[in-house]
Every structure is written in structure tokens, then in C-alpha cells.
Length: 173
Image 1 (tube, rainbow, N blue to C red):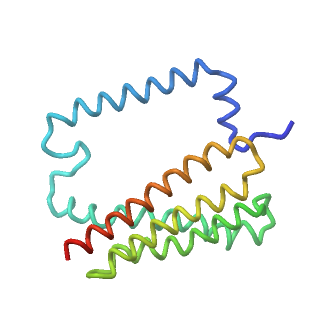
Image 2 (image 1 turned 90 degrees about the horizontal axis):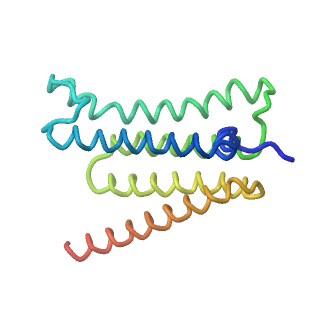
């Protein structure tokens, strides 16, 4: 029997009660957060210093994009030349498609004006294309089919939302 793609999947399926308990713990934490946040005027994690809050709002997302991009760079510059086990096609394709996504994501915050919306849309579509491509490569493994269906559904809904938003913006202008 082939080893599952996600080691957690085997643990969750063999211990259904444990997965059920974890799900309810997450649900309880989400509900508790909703209750706490409802009475607050500011976010729980928002700093009291306005300058720091403004700086974090502009830079935290860029740091996250750089951290995603560094994974691909480490793969291509360190691990792949070193001959590690991560030479399967899906890893190479995903990391290769992550580098243009990083570029688009960093451009998203830098470009102002009319082109900003286009960069954001292209970045969204490229991110969805990256996930769909990786999952199509892994389609022969049964446990990835659920993730592929979910990603395809989200991609289709996001694309429809972008088209509707574009048409409504044209009607307003």
C-alpha cells in the first residue's frame, strides 16, 4: 500500500474521535474569539502605538510573501543542487510557480493607480493556477482529489467574482 501524501491524513482517519475533538476545540476557540472581538472597538492584536500599527499594516503581508518566496529559493539554490529527496515534479513545479507569484505579490503593494487592481487580479489568478497545477500533477493519489475539488471550486468562484466585479465597475464608470 502506498504511503499517504499527508502523514496527518493517516493519523486523522485512524483516530476519528481525536479528529472530532480537535475540530470541536478549533470551533470553540473561533466562537470564543468572536465573543471577545464583538465587544472591542480595536483588534485584539493591534498595537496601541498608531505609527507601529500603520507600519505593520503595510509590511506584515510583504514579510509573509517574502517568507513564502524564500521557500522556493531555498529549494532551487540549496536543496535541489544538493540532491535531496525533494526532486519530484510537483515540488519543482510548485516552487517554480511560486517565484512569479512572489513577484506579483510584492508588486501588489508597490503599484498605485489603475494598474494596482490588475496586478492584484493577476496575482490571485496565478496563485490559484499554482495550486491547481500542483494538485493536477498529484491527481493520481486519491487523497489529493478532495483538495483539488475544493481548490477548483474556490478558483471558479473567485474568477466569477472578479468578472462580476469588473463588469459592475464598468457599469459605474
